[in-house]
Structures are given as structure tokens and as C-alpha cells.
Amino acid sequence: MKILAIETSCDDTCIAVAQCQGSNFELLSNIVSSQIEVHKEFGGVYPSLARREHQKNLTTVLEQALKKAKLLKKEKSKSFRIQEILSREEILSKLLDSFLKNYKKPDIDLIAVTKGPGLDPCLWTGVNFAKALSFAWNLPIIGINHIEAHILASFLEKTGSNNKLSIINQSKIFPAISLIVSGGHTQIILMKKFGNYEIVGETRDDAAGEAFDKIARILGLGYPGGPAIQKEAEKICRNIEMSKYRVKLPRPMLYTKDYDFSFSGLKTAVLYDAKKRKKQTQSYISAMAKEAQQAIIDILIKKTIKAAKDYKVKTIILGGGVSANKELQKQFKEKIKKENLDFEFQIPKIKFCGDNAAMIAITAYLKKNLKPVKINTLAAEPNIRL
Ligand code: KG4
Ligand code: ZN
Figure 1 (cartoon, helix red, strand yellow):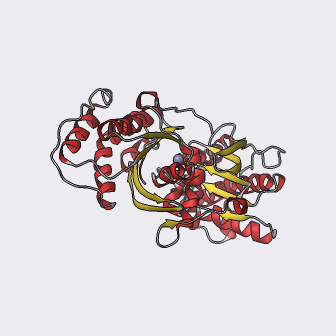
Figure 2: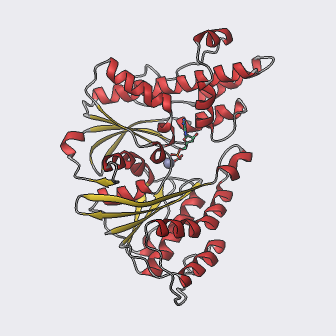
Figure 3: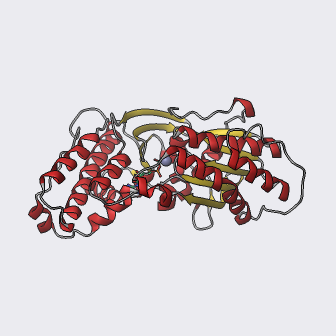
């Protein structure tokens, strides 16, 4: 069976193709078209602009994904009357119509698309695109939860060098605690098996990625903030410089008994501190970037390990854009080793930490019991919970 997976919940236009056979899952292509250049000047994602970019990009990304998967074949064909489904996606409608007229129906068996959570206009464009393909090619379609896909992204690691996933022994992995840290979410999730999730903690205000993005903006480091702060923090190698600038941020909710987070105070603390300084020197910016990154890491690690111990889990699973942070990964591993904790630690490859469609494909595959839905019942659900 071949799955065509589509993800447009935020500012990346992503399409992947995967082939599954029994217990094997093989990724045939995985294309991510980033919109960073478009949103950079606004210092964050602008939903209506992101939607327009998705409309412009989706057909090209589809063509690239099918080509890489060796499923693209030229063939003139009739018009598919997708205009009604794409009545609100004018740019996309024209581009897709021309694509469908020029290419043969590919050897795909199922379409999987992110239905939420995410930015409403962006989700709708992806969902409408998927519906149009499902209609034109007469293929079953399913909607996938973006957070669940971030959780399952690290299972792509089990595919080894030949990109093939073999049988997963669930009893060795579960129960697991998953920390999902992205631009829109920060949640600790207890997972008993595939498809069984309980959110045990989450942020009460900003997400961790949002904190990185907002702090980076205050420090003039640009967008996206996470990678920019990570890079800036790497410039400080000696603690002497840290003490010289006396940058010390709070660790909100570090010792509370729950598994919740609060990151909005960090951004305010950085703002006050930066305003206090007469001049923000380069070294000050680096020192503050390092301290902000460390504050976020301290809180994420402490709460996740606490949840993992309390729920006596076997595995800690990371996912979401922030899980790409090198220091976060390193310090997580060090903590587990230092405390001699008996947890397996599962992180996605860097390219699967942020948004991608490979994680949508593997979610569709791992949840074999998912039933295809009728085209007209599938809708974007921007606020859907696990
Ligand atoms: O999962 P993702 O790609 O999109 C959402 O679903 O939100 O996450 C994007 C977030 C952004 O806030 C970005 O600044 C952050 O992930 N991020 C990072 C790093 N790379 C991306 N945060 C910290 N360190 C990184 N290396
Ligand atoms: Zn995401």
C-alpha cells in the first residue's frame, strides 16, 4: 500500500510518499517547502500569507514528491471538476487543474492529511487540496492529528539506513511519556499504546517555541527564533562571560507539583532586562540567548523527567520543532545518564523534528485501524485535541 501524506498546518508546505507492506514502512519521498523567507520580515507566521504560499506551492511539492517516489507519469487526461472543492482556493485550483490534466493517476492507495491543530486558513488549504486529489483520483482519505504525528515522528528512526521500518515491539516501548514542543504547543503526554494518549501537562500560556521566537525578536535575532537563539548561545563558551553580564532569568513553575508550564514570564523578563541595559552589546545578546535557552531547557527536562518517573514509563519520546535544539537533546541524555534512569530516549532525526509529511504518513500507517472518511465530512479542526 502506498500513502500520500500532506501537511500544511503552519508555514511549511510538506508532502511525503510512503510504501507499507505488512510490518515494513518505507519512505519513498519527503518534500518540505519552507516559507521562512516570506515570513522573516514579519518576525512570525502571517496566516493569510502562509495560506497563499501553500496554494502556490502545493502542486509543485506534489510533483516533486511523486517524482522522487518514481510515481510521476505524463499522460493527457480529462478535466476533473475539482473547482467546486477548491472554490475558496483560487490559485491552487488553477495550478492543480493543469497538473491533473497532464499527469496520470499515480499508484497511490490512500491520502492522509493533517486536519489540526494548527492555523485555520493553512489547514483548510491542505485539507481542500487533499479532498480534490481524493475526488479526482478516487482514493480514500483520512485526517491526521498534527500532535499525534509529532509524537510518532521518532518512530521514523526505527527505519534504519534502508529507510525501512520493521516490527515494533510495543511492550518494550510503552507506557511512554512524550514531550511535544513546537511553535504552537507544549504538552506532556502519557502514551499507553499507539492511539492511546492522555495529556498530563501543558503550557498555560506561550508554547516553548513561541518563547524562543518572541525572545529572539526582542534580542533582534530574527525568525525562526529557536535556531537563531541556539546559534547565538553557542558563541558563549565560557561562564566568565555569563557572570560578567549578570543575566539571570526565572524558571517559572519549575517546582510545581503538576506537569504544566508557563513561558510568557520569560519573554517579559528578557524584555525588562534588555530595556535596562544602556546598550545591547553583541556579548550581552549572546549571554541572554544562552540564559533564555537554558531556562527553557531546565523547565522542559525537569517536568518531563518528573512525569516519566511518576508514571513509571519505559520511554521518553520527544517531538516538535523545539526538540531539534542540540542543547536540549544533549542535556536530556546527560540527565538520564547521570541519574542512572532506566528510560529509553527517542528523538526524531533533526529533519523530522519540525513540520514534515513523513510523520503524517507514519501516523496513518501505525494507526492501521483508522477508517477512511467521506470527502464531504472531512474538515480542518484548528483546535482539535489529542
Ligand atoms: O513543530 P514546528 O516546526 O511547527 C509547529 O508545529 O509549531 O515548530 C516550530 C518551532 C518554532 O517556534 C521554532 O523557533 C522552534 O520550533 N525551533 C527551535 C529549533 N528549531 C526550531 N527551537 C529551539 N531550538 C531549535 N533548534
Ligand atoms: Zn508542528
